[in-house]
Length: 483
Image: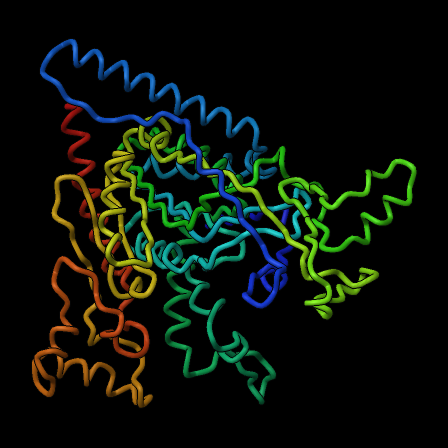
């Protein structure tokens, strides 16, 4: 197993507490999203007449040209990560080895992308993703015989080590010291599971079945994704792209990005004003994508509305605001489908919080990008159920049975699932309860019906075999068209 480290680790500083907006303070973070989109979108048109066919082809060619222009503009103006060449070489060797043996290769993207607000990054926008779905899926793909390229957010969960790296228990609690020898040993309570995980990890490493490549920013991610998917072209339909990363929808273009840390006080501004080359004293200070402004307020009405930022003298007024101007990240999934990996099977994910729009958004994505599968999931039930949305197929809900959970409210493990089994079997529960436990086949679960604790079965153990079945069909379909 190969693990390529990113040599440029960015320091993460959580500034949420200093930028959050409250109803009692006029100090706020304002995010401005430029949603205007002049890009042309392709549409699918079918016609029996040759004239309409030519018109459709012209439209498709124009749309493809537009997509290519957008791709070239983004990648030429957003510098690649410094480790891209190293990562590409490692991926090329890995793909070549497994292609020669006829093995299927899956590229799994995992974890969240950051949006830097400065070139020398201190502050950035992030999301909640820890990479659980991607890291867990990687293990089940490996068990199914796939070679795995794991493109992950640096320091997010990794296959196998995920069982301990983000555990609620300290890793040291899994070990103890042998009093007689002084050797460090595994706690007997955890020995069996650790041995099982270690054996699987060693098998993947010894057979060179897992290549791990890190990214940090949204730009890092897109450069890496394009480079690796292009390298997977020789795999044809045996290549699978499983896009589970939580990708940022908005970013700060480099030409509008501040070079240095965005200042929250007037200390530096006042220093520069005392110098001959200083900028004119005004009420607005532009710093790359941000504008620091000071509003005039009625000091009589708000006599105590100021705070001390340690390095500011006098104290900073509460009326100070930080405005961040963000552009939408170009959507490159269509480029991936048509150009980067035209024969590979492509799986994307759609996470929503509103159950009423989940399937609609998944179908919209499928129609817009013309790929092979969208896996929809809701934030509150994502560990219990997902929905497969694929062309020409009925929506397929994949669920963990509610009587399969890890913990009980009493803490007695022998009673795991006992109460839920009664509901599922119809004993000890009224009709309303049974309806909540067994949701309609074509609708999301009611989160309030879920039992306490997490599922005993990882839903990825159900997702991956279903994806593999669709991949089998994809391979057969592509090969039959060639024959």
